[in-house]
Length: 214
Image (cartoon, rainbow, N blue to C red; front, side):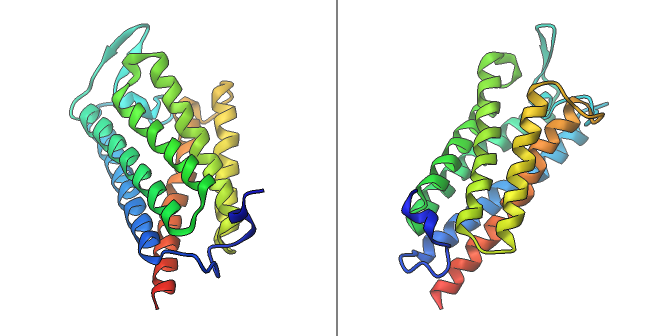
C-alpha cells in the first residue's frame, strides 16, 4: 500500500500549505465555473430535456450520424469543460506537490485529460468522445473513493459515498439501465455527486492549507 494511504492530510508533517491552497482554489474555480456554465448551456438550448438528452448533447447533438451544434450552448459547454480539464490537471500537480498523494494526483490528472478530451472531441468524433467520457467518469469516481483514505471524517464518508454513487451510476449508464431517470438523468447521477464532492474537497484543501500556515 502506498505510504500516503497510511496517513490523513492531518497531521501529516510534510504538507506544503501554499500548494494545498493552490490546489483547492483552482479546483473550486474549475468545478464552479463548469457547474454554472452547464446550466447556462442548458438554458440556451431550445427544448433541451435533462432526462432524455445527455450532457454531451450540449456540445454536439448527434442522431443517426447527423450532428448539429446548437449555439451558443455548444461553445459554452465545450469551452467550459476544457477549462475544467485544465483546472483538474493543475489541481493534480499542486495536490501531489502539497501532500505527495500520488494516486489522488494520478486519477485527478486522468480526469483532467478526459474532461479536456470531452470538450475537444465532442459527440461528432464518435468513439474518441466515448473514450474520453468513460475516462473522466471512472477516474473521478475512483479519485473520490481514494479521498476517503487521506481526509478526515465526516468528509471522508461523504467522499466515499460520492465515489460509490458515481461508479455504480457509470455501470448502470453503460448497461442502459436508467431506473426511470432516462439516459440524461442517469448520466447526471454520474456527474452531480463528484461535482458536489469536488467543491467540498476544494474547501477542505484550502482549509488544510490555512491550518498548516498558522
